[in-house]
Image 1: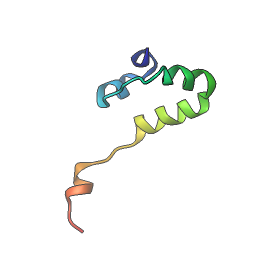
Image 2: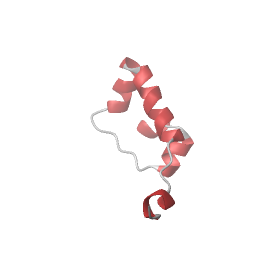
Image 3: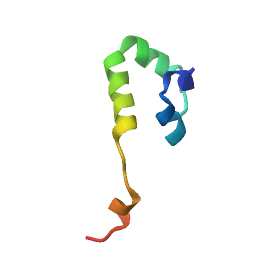
Image 4: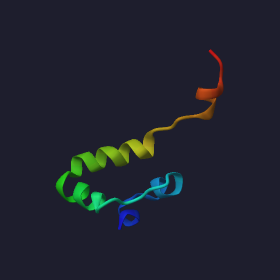
Length: 55
């Protein structure tokens, strides 16, 4: 069920696991928080160069 709730970008770029139907609870009882999580996962980027490039 989790993968059906996730946009393709999130499914393709993250390893996602369901724990005790958390996505069902979030989507039904806390839709604003679910949308915040999805927005974060689709827009946030952590570039390797940001970490490996010196000072």
